[in-house]
Image 1 (cartoon, rainbow, N blue to C red):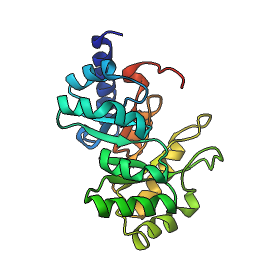
Image 2 (cartoon, rainbow, N blue to C red; image 1 turned 30 degrees about the horizontal axis):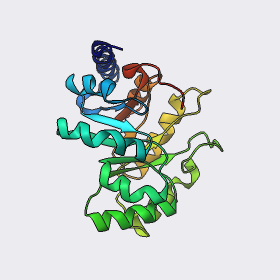
Image 3 (cartoon, rainbow, N blue to C red; image 1 turned 60 degrees about the horizontal axis):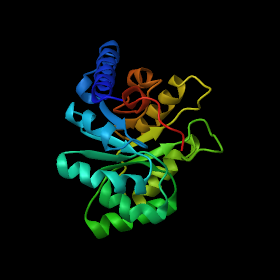
Image 4 (cartoon, rainbow, N blue to C red; image 1 turned 120 degrees about the vertical axis):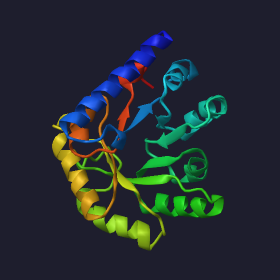
Length: 225
């Protein structure tokens, strides 16, 4: 696709974010667009950077390592978010590479992250992933376990958790899942909510999302991996 296609996709998403914020009586400045660039190469990403986007999301540490150092060298000020499942043995690389990690979901990962944050002196913003649909195939903390897990992150591992992330079940209305995540965040004093993707980010914004993760609406359909 031509560079103009990617930049026009970005413009359309930004306009939709502004519209959703107006309808929710929110300031668009309170919503961060995370452009999900997983599986896309520099030829697709660079036009989106040139169009002004600075926050990007990746699913895999190895893929991010292979393409982002060269891009960030050419374009300073990029913020990189890890939005996919993170293995504990990748914590070292993740802490070094990412500015935010959206998929904190188990004690072993907390332990690995705490160790690397101390060792590297670098602290990405951390989001705990909530499995709002209790889906067996998905990562994430069950809603009923969230309060205890958040306390454990703080008290046992010394981690500062900044927010929550969720991915609603594909076959259910997303709004109740966004509302549940927002409720858990509020009672735990967490300011950030990573909710909403290409198909449902306006609903997430209505429920208080501070970060929306949008890929296909910007970059087009991605190849199956």
